[in-house]
Structure formats: structure tokens, C-alpha cells
Image (cartoon, rainbow, N blue to C red; front, side, top):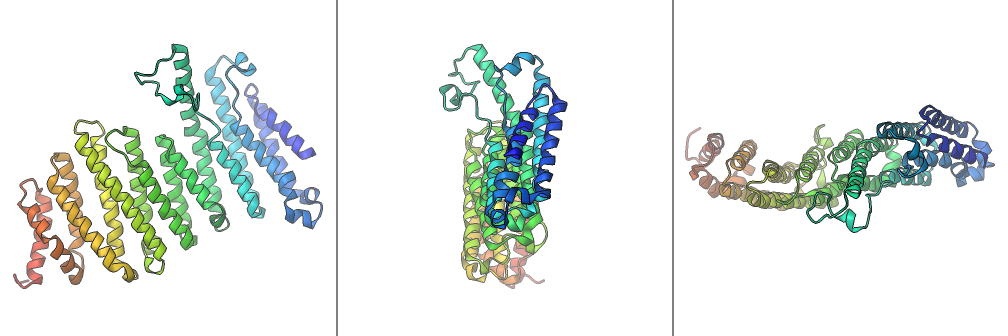
Length: 460
């Protein structure tokens, strides 16, 4: 038990905000304890059977990593003894943050350096400890009526002192998410990248669930970080992803699009977070490194992935419908420009998936279903454009539909004919509308000229 006692003692020293130098030295000594475990494995295992049974983990690695996480999670009560000696709040929180950051850095450095020797069940224990970091701070008065009512609500009747305490708690919670949670998120993703082949069958659902937790906090910075980590994970390991991993990622995107979808009552932060989700979804699904990096390519060999993509299309169309409805209800809302972006981005995201599936040479099995959904969506989009009343909304849709029809002009003859036969009445209605922009009219005129040439109405 000597090592466990030693590490526990160092952890206590590391939690002393009054002596920052001593705290930092204690954390560094815990790192040396990790090296000791690695260099003296036999002293912890006893024999080969014990080594395979995990006594090295229980007696060596886990105490080191767990105590580092405790340093990160440990919070000193403001009414405790320490607070009676510390009058400078800035010093207190700066010192606390420095210690948390150093502990996080050391914890993940140890994992990256020695994780190659970890067993599967050790990894599960480790990430269980890591994910506790995110939930270690609970909102002030969690579960009480005070906590459930916003501070600025007219129904929130509290004493000035209590209100001040709650505001301070909220500020600390935001600081925790902006710093410690943000750091832990990037570090956990970095470790996952380092050992991706080993970890994807073990812990990918748990990592995705943690990303979703970050997106649900209402913190714009943490939400952006979660999406950036997901994109980094996908870009770094796309060539290593199994079919099951691809389906998990697509299902995750479908879930978060629905979970973050906003309406006219949503605040600007909520709408901004949803726009980030829509933007990241488009980049992830289409891929940025050619056909092999796209989640849409080669779906014919994987019917479950095709079904997952169609579910994602459904989720994006829910976002489109919510955005379109919200625009009509929020004509004087400050979030109106963001809501217009929501409806156009969600529509374009759904359409881009269907178009890519439509052109995928290996997706022949689902061709008729994909074509029908694509044509219905295009028809709905043109009809929606004709119903727009706001200039900013109409301009956004004009740009989107002009780009879409530029892409349709590049269809081969057989697909162009099938597409225009369905959309021709809508195209005529759009050209007849006096609100249609000049640029959009020019694109539609090119479409009609190709139709005339295709059916022998005009000469080439």
C-alpha cells in the first residue's frame, strides 16, 4: 500500500492553493510515481498470473491517475478554512486554475506515454475517471426551486445576497466549462487519436455521448470545442474507421441535429450552437479529402449506413421545418438572420446528402428511393421560395437555389431529363415571380435552353 499512500499524500499537497509552488512540485512528483510503476512492474504484479489479472492497474496505475483526477475535481468551499485566509478572489481562482490545468496535462501525458500497455478494462476505468471531470461541478442549488428559475426572471424573488451568490456560482460554472472541461475534451480526443484502433470498439459510444453532453450545456465555446474534436477525430482516423464506427458517427450527428434544433423562442446562443452543428454535419458527412473520406460514398454495401444517412436527412428536414416556422413567428426577433441561416443550411445539408447518394455509382440498390426524395425536396424548396416574404430570406434562398441548379446543369442527360421533367412547373412559376433575383433567373434560363436543345426545340 506504500505507493497508494504516497500518491494520496502528494494529492493533498497538490490541492493547496496557498502554496502554488509546493502544489506544482507535488503534481510533478506524482508523475515520477507513474514512471516508478512502469519501471518496477514486477513489484506490483507479484507473478505473471497477477500481471494479467490487473493487480498492476489496481496497485499502480489507477491510484496515480485517480489522484490526479481528484486534484482536478476537488473544490474548496468558499466558507471553508482556506477562504478565511484568502481575500483575493482573483488569486484564489487563478491558483485553482493553474493547479487543475497542470494536473490535467500530467494525467494525459502519462496516459499517452504508457497507454500502449493498458488492458481493455483499464481503458474503461480510465475514461470513467476522465468523464467524471466534466460532471464534477453541479449547478448551485441543483434540484431546488431557486436553481430552476433564471436569475433574471420576473418570478425569481431572492434576497440580494443569495442572488449575488448564484451569479458568482454561474460565473464559476462558465469558467469551469471554458477552461477545465475544454482542456479535458481536447486531451481525451488526443488520447483517442493516439490509440484509435484499440479504443473505437471499446469506448467510442461513450466519447460521442460526452461530446453530446458538451453540446447540451448551452456553452458556445464548449459546444464549438466538442464539434472541433469530433471533426478532428474523424479526419485523423477516417481510414481506420469500421462500418460500425461510421454508422455510430452518422447516428450521433442525427441525434445532435434534433437535440439542438431551435425555434422562435430560442435564444441567440442556442441558435448559434445549432448552426455550428449544421455546419460541422455538412463537413463531416461530405468529407474534405475526396470520395474516400465521405460518409456517403459506397453505401450500397452497407444498408444500415444508408438507413442512418436517411435518418440524418430526416433530422435535417426537421431543423429546416423548425427554422422556416420560426422565421414566420420571429419577424422582429434579433435572432431572425440566424433562423434564416438555420432553414437554408438544414435544407442544403439534407439535399447535399441526397445528391451525393444519387450520384454514387455503388448505391444502385437505393437509387429509386434516393431520386424520389431528392425530387420531392427540390420541389418543396422551390415552393417554399415562392412563399417567402422577407427580402433577406428571399435573397438567401435565391443564392441557395441558384447554386443547386448550377449543379443540376452538370447532370448527365438521363438524370437531367428525369429531374427537369418533375421540376419544370416549379421552374416556370419561379420565372413568373417578380421577386426572383436576376442571378437566379439567369441560371434557370440556362436550364430551359438545355431543355430546348434536349427535346429538339432549339438548335445547339
